[in-house]
Length: 239
Image (cartoon, rainbow, N blue to C red; front, top):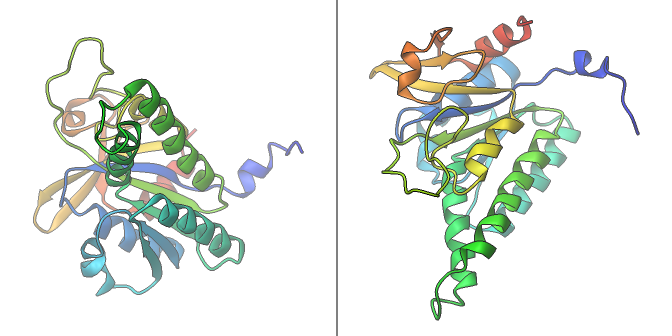
């Protein structure tokens, strides 16, 4: 059924990817600021529980599930839907999605090689991998809630001729295959988390999105405290 365009004004939600190097404080900064700004939420933890230990000492306003398989991810999406529909969760945070994508890539490669008995078939693996990655993101972004994905940023290895670029504007480097270019297009904003010192983390933001440490010198890039509530207020004021 068609919906009126006015519905977009009544229910604005934050839909963003937060990029940052490993151990830069993405989990802590995002979870803490989400709870302060919006209340209770749900964390889909694709790594270990350790990334949430520090923030759990400051706030208890979130539930979480750890993801170790596709079955776990499907169960987490179902729980996110339930919690949002029952108004138990105001936000969903997927942390760190690049870890899940890396695991899924390995699973599909292993399946295509029949347990290592033959060479993996990339022509089968990567189209299927992209479809599954994009499907997860689309289903979560369809929730009536704030949805944030955290992804690792790394300085990419040397590119191979004929392969998809591993870095640059519009690319999330730790996402495998063509999805590294297509995933960020689903989100309203791409934010880079930077560490000023051990006690200060900031967001680098730009109307066109920011894609790594080099964004500091890009025209239009601003620096704000690593606070998703503050960023949401700024985003609502944009034309």
